[in-house]
Length: 399
Image (cartoon, rainbow, N blue to C red):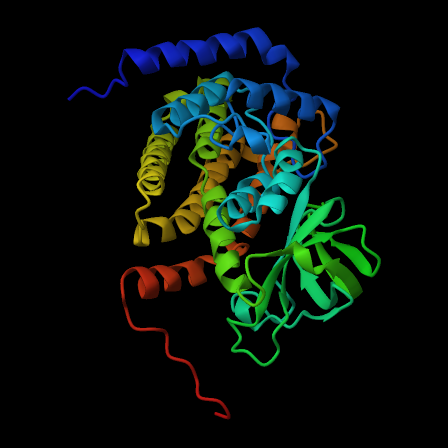
């Protein structure tokens, strides 16, 4: 069996390696976390776009590279940036979730206005989906809007709004048709976060940081042309976004980067005077995790193939979020165990390892198993929608 990519792709891999070696000193550190991109991040992103190493298939008229879809080239780019431990460009909800949604469902005006500043880091987005009483049952949301003088006037509350404390814009779900069935009365609206009437209150999580927020909306006025798709069809648009969110939460290149970091830990940390890499227990755990990461990688390639062929991947897409988030937690567990008691240190110690990032990741990964649809909800989706199993019984009202 010949698993090589062939001469064309060998040449492309050499091009990528040459670019990385020549330009890596310009790159910001990998994983900038949740913050607005600064000048260095934006300059690096522009350089990557111009060379086709990120936003590769986004059309040139919207600020992208304008390349033809090529799964193997995408994989090679991910592999080489990961191996070199070099920043592979900006990510986040705007780039990973909103941009593909606009490409699929946005108006020409919306594409030209929002895509380029989003992919270049000028506009940072947050997502207004969950509410205090509408998380797993998102379609029951109660944030509402009526139209007045060419504007939606929005009132309500969102919660777990990642990045809302510094985001420039928000893509938000709002009930605009109060008399329609719950799935048919929702609109998907683009909202400037500087609009009067928006109040953001940070929520401190167990990481000690405030990545999430409560967002309160009081008579917030948004132009009606900011609706994506048709008014009242926001549930369809939202599901377009959600398929990209769940793919983002199961990103194989991110998992592969974690494996590379764990390899470095096992090669440098020791127990009883011996490298942990020589310990069969840790080596077995690493190999098992590597196998899962490769499975996720090839599964991602399968989904990309379906996308290029305009085929419905069915249950194949539904497993990504569940598998990816639980795998990331497994990887951070291995790293923390390998670091021993030092792995529990978070900050403020001379014995800190990896700047305390693995402790932070481990706690944050637990949150992502819940966020974006809990693992329990994901299992229901897989069984009911993917495998055709009977729906979970619900208690009758009044009982």
